[in-house]
Length: 148
Image (cartoon, rainbow, N blue to C red; front, side, top):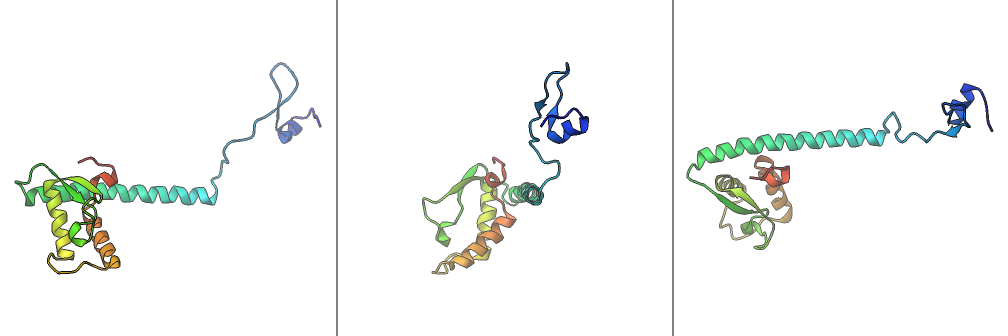
């Protein structure tokens, strides 16, 4: 159904070529100019996640300086088990390379939450709570995009 009126061409999605040639179909728009509610939620979640990561990076830098001041003779790096072995983590479990002073600070934080030598390991829910508490105060740098 061809039309010569400009309104009809726009309504039909037609574009007139420059020299009066036959009209051709305009390709459909690839993006909706208004984001859907799912897109708005996704963008908000991405911004919230970015804010958490940026805060964790600042906290890591702060805690690293504190640890270096507390343990000034602790140079180099050590491997830290994500789940400490004394809390039931496997010997071949995931490890992260951390500055020695920072590793000592994390170890002390774990010891404050669950002391050595109790003769038992925490229940799974308690272990999860301990890990959340410690890692929210001492983030693992590799997990927030920092190579120590």
